[in-house]
Amino acid sequence: MTTTPVEPEALEAAFEATIARHDRIEPRDWMPDAYRRTLVRQMAQHAHSEIIGMQPEGAWIGRAPSLRRKAILLAKVQDEAGHGLYLYSACETLGVSRAELTDLLLTGRQKYSSIFNYPTLSYADVGTIGWLVDGAAICNQVPLCRTSYGPYGRAMIRICKEESFHQRQGYELLMTMMRGTDAQREMVQESVNRFWWPALMMFGPPDTDSPNSARSMAWGIKRNSNDELRQKFVDMTVPQAEALGVTLPDPDLRWNEERGHHDFGEPDWDELAAVIRGEGPCNAQRMAHRRAAHEDGAWVREAASAFAERAGAR
Amino acid sequence: MNDEYAGDSSQWAFGTGFEDPLAGVDTTVPPGVDPAELAAYCLMLGDDALIMSQRLSEWCSRAPDLEEDIALANMALDLLGQARLLLTRAAAADPGVVPVLPEGSPVPAEDALAFFRDAEQFRNVRLAEVENGDFAHVVVRLLLFSVARLAVLERLRTSPDQVLAAVAAKGVKEVAYHRDWAGRWFLTLAQGTEESRRRLEAALDALWPYQAELVAPRPGFGVDPATVRDEVDAVLDQVFAVSGVERPDRAPLPGTGGEGAHTGALAALLAEMQVVARAHPSGRW
Image 1: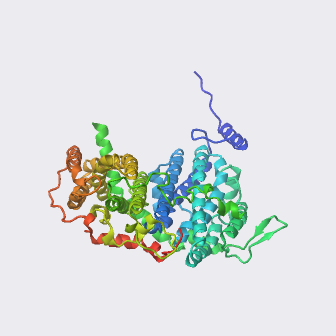
Image 2 (image 1 turned 90 degrees about the vertical axis):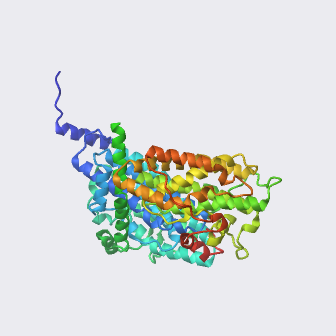
Image 3 (image 1 turned 60 degrees about the horizontal axis):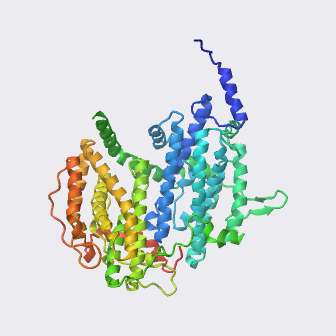
């Protein structure tokens, strides 16, 4: 039997052809190392964001003001744990384990979304996070359902369906509160004021200052630019804010007939850079919470492994 | 635009028509049943579920692994669902149990009961209210709780009260899973490492004095928990035997939560649980 050696050039050409056809790359396909590294970085960061993202809202499960809201919030935060699981599993198809990725998060070598470094100060924040934060996440994530890496795209389809529920429950909470007392309406407006700019920052730095974007676009990992998605989010959100009866805290926000889009002010990019550097209001708290949960659970994971080994030996 | 976002509640994932979870079920109190006794019984079962759910939900984002985080949240959600139906049933059977709120308050009965009663008005067992400890503590707590609750719910499926029978039929499936989860982890920790066994035994020792209350006699309407004591003992003995753990030799605490006996932990738990609701007694959520 003779085997035909496969030339690296041929592998690369096949990979490029798959990308050009907008087909999926699958785990056993050849892929450039840099493509694999970029995917692991992006998917792991997304998984970490789901897990860290359980904290800001999770802080209000115990204080939810009605049993119905408690059930909705608990189910929502549980979904986020589930999303983390899908994404860690998708990462594992690229040859990196959940334990390794957890270690990278806990030692600060991989990041999570900076939005979760802001505090939640009232129950209205549960609604605002659903509406604006999950809304922004959906804008970012819907194009990822068509991303070039198969397991990532398929995980994103499920995640986007659930995120869409999350956004609606948030908006519905705010809508209900706006029909309540004056104090509740003030709570909603105050919350929207705090989360509007951080939500806009979720799309990342402006295109002129986004170093990894071009290559991710070329590989079909990313499908739209940061600024395109940010504009889409603003255009989608303005009419929702009007229906809700809240003001978005941007004096420069207005409809531009010529562009067919809303003009809006510039987020404070220095603030985003500071939060990414670890100087946000809750960075230390979020990491300490995650680390404590991981360390407190170490003896349980060891016990489960020891038990499984013993059972396997029997 | 307004209609699209605000009008029809059916487009929302969770709807907005959840105010009456017993919609469509015959809620008439059956002949021969004292409505006040039925309400008291539902409050007891409902408070157990509510307070246990609150403690379980504190584990959210803190579990040893993502799988267990999801499992604990699931069990908290199951018990919360049972609590909502039972509190609503108590209020329907005897509206006199529902705390009075400011006139025109939109707060539904289940929430008035959950958020506007003080600690001494709660009827839950103390096992449900004591503070969380480590993972062994939640495993032991769930085991003791679910073994007794499952035995009671199984018998309640034939309750003359249709609502209670329906709640029990649904609850049996849920609590059977809780018992299974707790039993499997009990065995795993007992036979895992020296540390896991030490922690499991410490948790069992700490929680055992609260166990007897789960099967203490409770005369009146409903399944008397004392009638399931033998079955509960048998199940626990089996778990202990399989795991190689000795049944603790510790005296039970006197009194029962059903008579209003609580630990200091309940007031602290309620202070957190009720803080937002009480700040807005006419709020809409």
